[in-house]
Length: 599
Image (cartoon, rainbow, N blue to C red):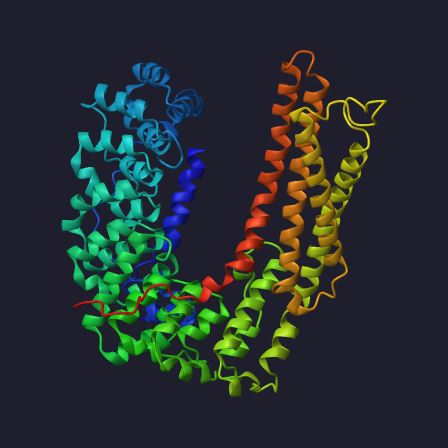
């Protein structure tokens, strides 16, 4: 297991650390032969410091007798892996030279294996009892010290133990000449990286600092990235931060620290770059603004526009604004900003992209599966698509609604073609749902109809009236049974009206969802009142005997009702909100575009 983790560490560092070379022609050939390689993997991270010669452990046991190797090294390896101090201590009594010797072909010492396996107790015992003889700076075949391996494994207790013995381990480079700080950032150990940064900061080289900063961004260590940015403002204008900004933009709408960091980076960009350079960032391959619109990073877009209002007019290479992209990807928060830009709104609606599509054509296209699945069920997805389409249609100038694109298609034609399969899926989903519910409603109606003519306790032979007609329990029984009959019949009618619907596009907007809401609500009421009627019948039957029996039965009936409500509630809420609360998607409640203050 430790071998596997060590191999993973080696392959990971090799994947992210470019091979340094002093041959400029070789560098040039490599860059020409890999033009499509991501910027972040082409960062030059060569350090100017020359590493001291490696301090490898003694190979005495590895290169010696095989019998002794299996007797000593293999036992030590598995004892270190499991943290068995007693076994380690016993072996070292007979073979004290094994303490600082290789016990594997990877030149691991006992401490390497224990640190990598996060065996803090074993490490503590070894360091405390053998502090005069143990060497903490020995390196394995890849050049890693036990401290480096502990950092890579996120073994915080082991790190503290080793650092307490030798504080210089925090700035001792490991494999591939990497500092422990970078190892912590690479493997996403935020707390460890924060503790190592104050110790490592004074010795960081310029390129090494940029490299670590970008790794923090990529792996989500935003607090440390902010600290580094405050300590070194030049990081904001490094060429390596463009892909880092893209990573942040795609994450910062979910995490506040990432949003703070991206705002700080953007402020520095506004300070240090010209208008033409800023527009290149927006329009060019980096697509910072457009990436934010695509993933729905509302907060970043608001911050960006508030500090640089000219971006409202910026388009990508296909001549689409952030509002076009927001509509395409169904990000209502971003699209709502259009209500704050005044008459510019009419101009943006008239914009045409490179294919002749205006914003009405774009909303007619089907969004990505990810955005489509924001609501559950094909029928509700179709409803949401119709809501978007109708809302944009209402905002468009009448003269633009029938405009055709370069393919000679109107928005209505595009919508029908793009949503044909979703329409069929919505019809199938609606029918399957209503068919199942119809069967349940019909069963309830049959039961309550039968019970109405076989009242509990029977009828008086002289008057023909129910014997218990004067008791309150019978009154509740009759009312519950009547309501159950009414609500089950209502739900059956609603479900039948859905099954016999024509399933046109417009039906999914209001008609079908409303009928489904009424049908599901009636079904729940019928089931609940049928259960109440059953409980009252039990009370009537046992009124002259022990009351614990009807009380127990009534208590048990709460379970199916609660379970039915729990299973039905999410669907009911989704349908209700999608049908009656959809207008709030496009309603701007507060003004967000305003002066951001001095940069």
